[in-house]
Amino acid sequence: MISFSLWDIIRNLLLAGRWTVLLSLATFILGSAVGMLILFARISHRPFLRRSAQAYIELFQGTPLLMQLFLIFFGLALFGLEVPAWLAAGIALTLWSASFLAEIWRGCVEAIPRGQWEASSVLAMGHFQQMRHIILPQALRIAIAPTVGFGVQIIKGTAVTSIIGFVELSKAGTVITNATFMPFTVFAAVGCFYFVLCWPLSKYSQFLERKFNAAHRH
Image: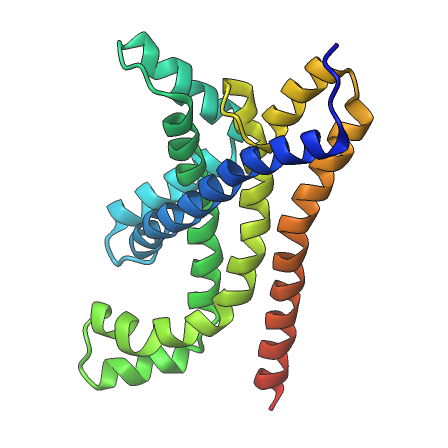
């Protein structure tokens, strides 16, 4: 057993926490980009695009993130493609988060009154122009709160990547526990780190939701 002080535990968790934050940010940015493409396909007038987007969403929402992670990390290796843990983690979380973000945003788009679509049609706007100039600016206000709230799920979802060896907070906690035999202390600290990352986002999401509801009532 290696002797670790409380500061040693915290310092090592802070180092691993950087990767949790970076992976979360990368997932959010890339997932948003992919999610926006899925959104446009989901609300497209073309049946093939709509059905394809719906199938994508049902696939990634209907299967465990852990399974998706395994398929990317181990499945690609069967075809001779050695994917490093960080890349497999990024791909899996991006595809997973995109399916949820696309549905969140679709709900926001559909929350826009039908009259807005009809009014823009009268102005001879095409579908893309309607989305760009009329619908998306209004849907964005509705989408901010749930999108920020989903960021909490992304942060917590990064813990799953420890299974394939990506060293983030959870994996670092396991490694330190194996070295110190202090599981309660170590994982209490890990839990505190996750709380510090997630709680502000959760409260900010609630604040934005209240702000939007108040503005909507007036």
